[in-house]
Length: 185
Ligand code: ZN
Image (cartoon, rainbow, N blue to C red; front, top):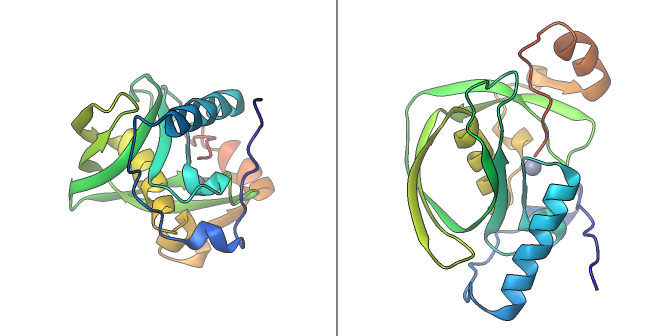
């Protein structure tokens, strides 16, 4: 029967584990798991979620994208299962933008991310994708990829002054900067 997942929150030691590679993408068990997590992320209307966030210590995550106020040119990307991802290259250039995380509720922070990355990963169909992501998709990919290595966005900030509590962020940023994106992954 379909069962919702519980999202691990910061402080749970399993969020800090290095996840294991997915060995058999085509196995029935894994195919069911991918479908369940896709359904979950769609129901949550999230932009992404990594397996370790639902206490599955394996190297896969979901990512999706649609245009938003901060990234009006973000491509439309249906929720996709990204399995055994590798980052092949990262631009020197980094940019700071606001991020939130389902595992760190009530907190926002400015996080520097590489603006362009070349990546390779396996799809649920067992096809291999090699692609360059920039801007918003590069940011989501780096955020989710970090979860596979036991990292959260707060590990990437430059200064604790770049952290805000959700209420204050809503008052001071979201209401004053029409470009601030209201997304958590
Ligand atoms: Zn996250």
